[in-house]
Length: 385
Image (cartoon, rainbow, N blue to C red; front, top):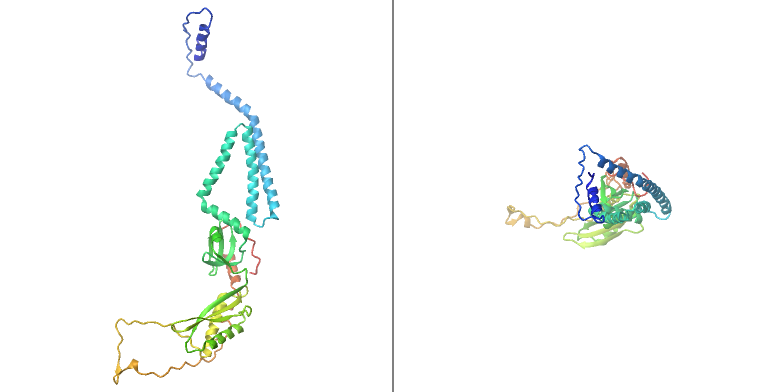
């Protein structure tokens, strides 16, 4: 009896290859193993155990190299962060470069582990697969990647700082913070708005804080019977006497166009945007110009309108002459209102002074619930509260 088919076949081949043997009849029977025979299982487990024992040195070496490469990567990132701190102003870019160097050192250690273990092909596959996975992730999360890259470029260029008044993508407000995804603005009506960094980077951005002086303008109409040069001088005197209007650059009062019912004058003036609110100063100047025109008898006519009466207008005749066609006496300008206390004030109680509202908005921002808990990539605002 033979234990296995291999032994039975070996015995037959041995007999056939013996000299002077003409024929061989292999009558060796195979032993039927018992149903409770676990010898094969024990042999398999023994083989696995032997393989594991042989692999233990490689395992310990691999763990040692991985730990060593991890520590080396951490030290590399830390040293790189200190190295870039005095050379790169953007904090986010410093972190990205330092982290990339640390990861590169760790990946080199992992590649050495695979080479020592004899898994060179697997190492090359992992390296190639990492690039493909990175490309797939970049395509799948294109918006996130775009905002992240835009935050890096914005932190490098620094077109604004915390507390600057900017206008971007049609939104005007004070910059509260910029994280890796969005820029947070406090609008002039006290709302927090998140603008994606990709939109901030690509859109037209106006920073009103880089130059503290700001020019404003408005249009006022005068009657065709009024002298233009007189109206210009009256408006110019109002601007010259206004404490919030700058004399350098000097204000302008220019003829804008000839309208249907009025000559339009456009008034330009400069103000200090850090100290004064452009909304309040503009309101004050318009009010004082209108008051000065009334005092000097300069009319501000209403725009011409066309009124349609679909059911007609009843007309009453007196002596055969329609009432509306009777000659009318020349209309005189109404007398100027007597000066009243407070009408010529630079700032009324309704305007609440001319000071900038930046402090009030900063106070509101402190009490507002933050929209994003991410790290602020901009320097903190050290301006006045």
